[in-house]
Image (tube, rainbow, N blue to C red):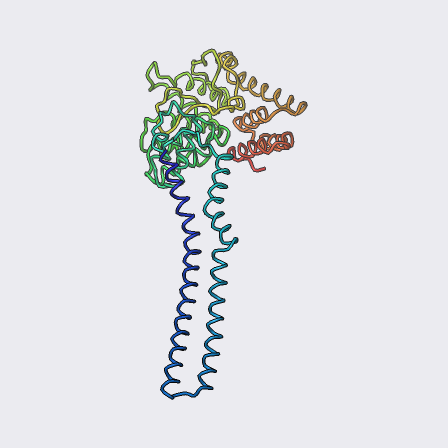
Length: 411
């Protein structure tokens, strides 16, 4: 009800703003004509007085009366014309349109295009709505709107960054972590979250920037599991298998028996041993769906700055390395046999892709596998073939280019 009262008052004010000047203009015109007539009448009386005193002659008096009478008639006609224009038909129509027509048109437009029966939605109530009652996209949009107006709100960026990761928006997550670091300063969790986001953007490759972020996180908090796992993975990706195996073994040896990330660490250790042709540690990967080499997943890592260590959505299939069953079967092999087994799987994948084209995930697996085996020239050639095979998709081309750049392959 209050809204309608306010609208009615605004309409009345608008009508008065139009009608007021019209009325004042008419009154001003009428008062000016009256003043002129009063002056002319005084002049006629003055002529009569001058004639009686003998100051002017009869002829001059008649000439003066004639001129003043002519001016009186002209002034009278002007006043009548002004009054007629102000009170005529056109003036009345204009006043009616201004006072009634415009509000009526505005009301009709609102009723046809507006929603007068929509209940009130106060801003305070919408902002105070419980998160579980709101759509996640709306919540993110609300925070994004706030941050656009308050870009120096570091806490807002820190809250939004891990949400971006869960929504599979790693590039946005990386930028949010950068903003949080810029406004709040560096911290182990923020650096680790940034490194993870950059790794996901690169398709599971720990890039130079991601490595720097993980190293900064570990320098401040040496016990940060996710950052250490990603750095161990980077050693494998760079072909430094002996260092990777030593790092994984040290990490596993110092872990508690029920550490949730142990199964993933053991899988990565086995994969590094196989890829490097090194003696097995005797810790085969557990059965079940693996977290392949190239995608660590320390599921229990408490990382408020992001879901550190989780496998990027839709990327696990692109990771290199054997399956859990393959790793388990290879655990008891001699180093030479393990190497031959891995190279045989890579060769079969390469042959199949050469014959059938393959998808971007399969090409990514081949490129990464060749790079891990230290066969950089073949990995580069595979990347060029992959670009030709997926050239119809800009997104797939970008994935291949990002992967090649992360592996240091000059295309």
